[in-house]
Structure formats: C-alpha cells, structure tokens
Image 1 (cartoon, helix red, strand yellow):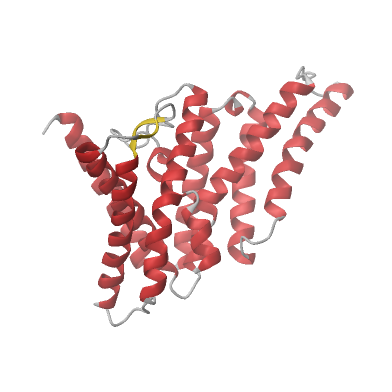
Image 2: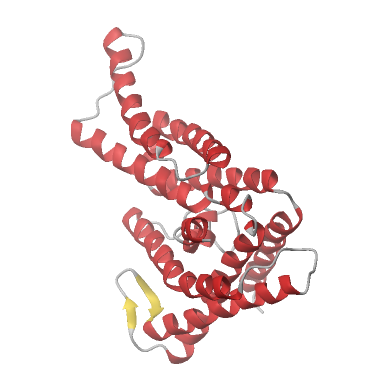
Length: 280
C-alpha cells in the first residue's frame, strides 16, 4: 500500500468515526451544531472555488447567512423560504450599502459594474443555497422520529453507492456517462451504484433492527431511500464537478489529506438530505 493510499484510508476512517459518533451517540442539538460547523467550512470552500472570497463583504456575509439560516431552519423547519429571501436580499443590500457609504465618503467607493455586481449576486445566492441544501437539513432531519437513522442511512447508502460505482466502472465500465464533466463515471458504474445504495440502506436497517432500544423504520421507506440515493447522489457529485471545472480547481480544499476538501467528500448528499426531510 502506497503512502498516499494509506493516508486516504486513515483520514477516511477518522472522518467516518467522527460522523458515526455524532449521529449515533449525540442528541439533535449537537448534530445541528456539527452541521453548522460543516456549513461554515463548506461556505469557506465554496467561496474559494469562486471569486466570492475576493469580495470580503460578500465573503463575511456568507458566514453570517449560514449562521442565521441554519439556526432559523433548525427551530422553525427548513420549509420556510425566508432563508432564500435573506440570501438574495442580503447580497444586494451589501452592494447597495457599500455604494451608499462610498457616496457619503465613509469608505472607498466600489467600482463594480452592474454586470460584475449581478455576477457576484448570482454566485452568492447559488453558494448559500448549495451549502444550505448540503448541511442545513441535517439538524431538522435529526429532530424527526427516525432522524438519526435516516441521516446514517442516507450517508451509508451514498458511501456504498460510490464504492459500488467505482468497482463496477473499473471492472465493466464501457459507456461514459458524461466524459466532459466527469471522465471516470460510466453507465455501468451507475447501475452498480443503484445496487450499492440499496444494499447500504438495508445494512443500516438491519443494524437498527438488532438494537431493541431504537425505533425502526419501515422496510418500504428503507428501500425507497436506497433507490433514490443513487441517482440523487450521482447528480450531486456531477454538480460539484461542474463547479470545480468552472473554477479550474481540482479540489474544493485541503481539509482531508488525500481526499480534498469537505465539499469533495459530501457533494453527493446535496440532493439526498432535502428529499429525506420532505419524503420521510
């Protein structure tokens, strides 16, 4: 085993241990706080991937947005659209306030063109929405009757799907799924991914069934989650690939040596967690 591969395995096991401990042994408020920290790290990485980090006011506003939107959604539920309103309103208000303070001579006047300003707003709204979909639903899901089981099942299903897709693609892959975006993904790998996500969901269901102290999810919900996790997980992975290709960067960050950033390891969950919240 090479040093690089050994590093990947060590950090993968360490990350899995931390996530497993948080989801299985801590109550929902601590799960929410863990997700909030992940959201702040995720925003930092997204701002790095785009030009937002160069605009300090937008960069700092993003951290404030994550704190307020995540907290509001945890206590009132993420089905409120106020956090999306806050994203568009907040980003434009930052630009307007900077302009006003520049006119008054309190700060150096900004020189963004309308085109540049609109570009920044688009990136800010997309970035905050992306981070919210990825981590903002974690706390509210944890509050559900089967919340911790749902979170663990969703993550495990996607992990099993990724492993199965890698094996199937390497062994049987012939038709590229989207070569311009993700050269390694194949149609055959996608079929294996579906089998993997269903198997991952069943493994968690079986493990929960062995513990009489926990509430058990219906087998029908387990199979549905496993079935949905495959296409949703692949779409999430492709979406981050698109963001990284647009930025010209290979990884979103360096948080996990051998794996890249937090977004690189969690991107497949961006469409999975919202579906889990609203369907289960």
